[in-house]
Image (tube, rainbow, N blue to C red; front, side, top):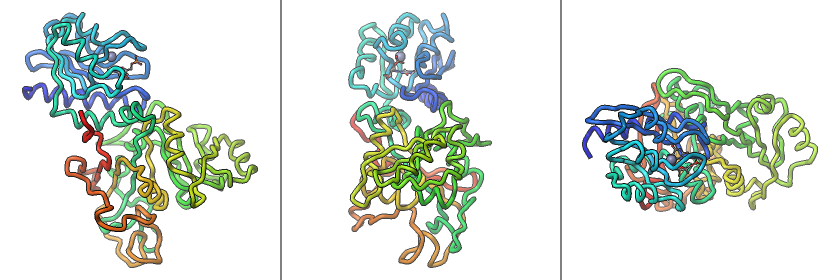
Length: 392
Ligand code: AOF
Ligand code: ZN
């Protein structure tokens, strides 16, 4: 692969991202048509049921596509779905060579697109250089397609010394504007955002996606993420900001049979959906059951924002796929500060029993661990189960 092919695939990955929030449960896909190192046309999959990225890019290129190369983030489809097969559009347009990054994860269609293109005499190549990024980008689509389950991300913000707040509990606006934008980008990418009742009562969060400004800013998604509160006894007051906005963006209270019917009824009257799920041995909502229930609603990615008990339970249950940590350049200090070692003290980012030995604390390989800047803050992104590590 020459360097211009790499550039066009980078661009296609960026373009694909623009469909996030509007195409699910379909994949995000980007495409660039180019000739002699110059782009002719580009497109992305913009909406569920709408034209596929390749077909849209070829359409824009028109007759200029004859003899040109197509760069696409996902193997072109060969099936008749909501649209005609992309391989037919590619053949019809007279494309010379197709470079794609990721095999279609759908076992029913995987390999068929590349095969059909080769059979039509078109040169086809899978770009190994971009496979890992493409696999991470479409991890929600791939995991859900294969298992019916969403990708689970845990997110928290902390100081340089690992504190969630100061000793007096001051935690609001821990991060800079840049960190806040990054946090909202994660929300915009999620199909559901989940917190525990403790966090809901303490912080009274809205859990909405606020359009952010500047770098890393996120456009509000076409469909607002489902806001979920883990609340076995349905204690969420109807006067919280979550419930007050329930008719603008959906709210789901995940309860158990321990919830008094009149509490559930009050929430329902306020526009909240109350879902009764099985309880774990501790009486709390079984998180595995919640994640499965979200997958059954075609939600492909869930963002857990805390608190520590919820993240601890997620970790103990082996449900975390990915972690996003914002690190603010501050030191809070203090033996009693949340996150500090030893009791008593408010929760750590990830509570629960934790790993007994270092060997039980999964070590994340370098390729699955990324460090970047978000304004004044650092963002650490780690794949605990890296989709890029799955067999090609
Ligand atoms: C997309 N957008 O740009 C590409 C896709 O339901 P359909 O007919 O839209 O087909 C969805 C399947 O098409 C999807 O699961 C994937 O296998 C393939 N490629 N899908 O939504 C696109 N290129
Ligand atoms: Zn297609």
